[in-house]
Length: 567
Image 1: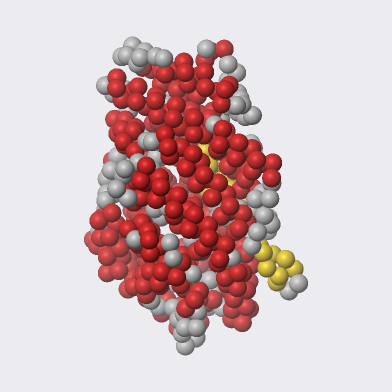
Image 2: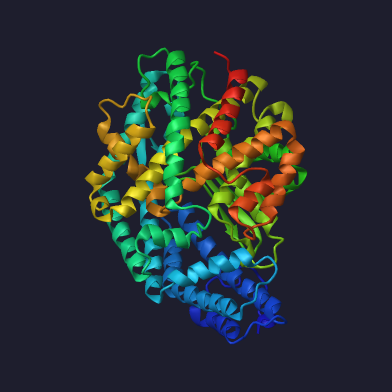
């Protein structure tokens, strides 16, 4: 049956479940044995790749244009007519493999994930999970429609960001307040949607008899190597080690700006009053600069990016009605990644492309693994792939190395990046701590005002150093402005864990760039066939997030900052 169907990666586009189901039925009728399991896994991979790619391409289309009603209709058709049935069919195949007792080569970790999935799988949750994705689409539409008038011209909030870096403090404040006013205008719409999301997730957890949504999500995310208590310890280590370092960054900035107190609109500005870095004029220039950098990091990685450019797998520029943020999606049947972002000409856009390209290189490297379950990687290591690439690329930011800047501006960009890493960990603790509070106190979290109080308390603990007087309502609404909280619950601590791993990879590269990149690529090539501690070790890091590990990371970065930017 499988041999007779077209091999085109997008062959399932437009198919109904009635057309897809016979392939699942064929697999479900088999009994995997030592002699037949490779064929079973090969055909299952073929089928899952095409269903997954269909979903990925439809999801991408809804973010490329949040007003595209036809793209939304097609995605809804998939979510309602195919996704639930396909999930149920996938689960039956997982059960078949688990029941066989077979452990094919490279399948110990994937089988553990399958067992976790089986424990929480419920048919009743399939339409609810599809409904959750519809709520995500609604959330993206709210953010995609956010525009303001700036000097008589309609601009998106990302397009307002360059004005937030203006050397003129009054211009920065005007841009900041304009964005804040628009965000406040959407408060009620996001709060209403939040209530629907929270109630739906509680129903999902109850159906799975997981105890609570946090326990359900922990299992769904395959977090075998750390616990919620470990997250609390990570938060405490950040409070001890990183918050004081962040205070030092803020104080240096305040002193150089010559202001009495540091206000939120002072954070994006250059502390020496220089105009913002302007690395590129358009997406084509951004691509060419990144391409040159990747070839310097490693010729094979550069060749991967060449492929993405040639095959138009990059959507980089911001525009009205485009979904928020940036991401790298995988098209598993095509064996290709796709990068989406909202570039407006800033250095942060360069960092975003370097980051998402790290994810894309991960897709290319793990494609050598024969079976789809082996290629599924938890974000705790997937983000090491992306964050390490930001740092591994840093020696090549200068135009003399193929990048974007003069030597002085390349050093400036590197300083900004290292400071941003230090400032990120406390913010990550706020976001992660808030999500733990939400799902431990779901009744309180249904009230937006109590969400604001919980967020404010965490903000006070982890984010000192900036003067928010008179802006308390904006602080309290901060939980609304982090889309991960709404669209990808519990997906944020991974960034904090992975940033530590990435700093370790970069530390190795400072002594041996070629060896560090080789270790990085070896770890990426293992896909999801190893535990997080083993993947980190392969990359030259430790899966640890305690006080000593943070102290080493902060010490390394502050040492480099002192050399590049002495007071």
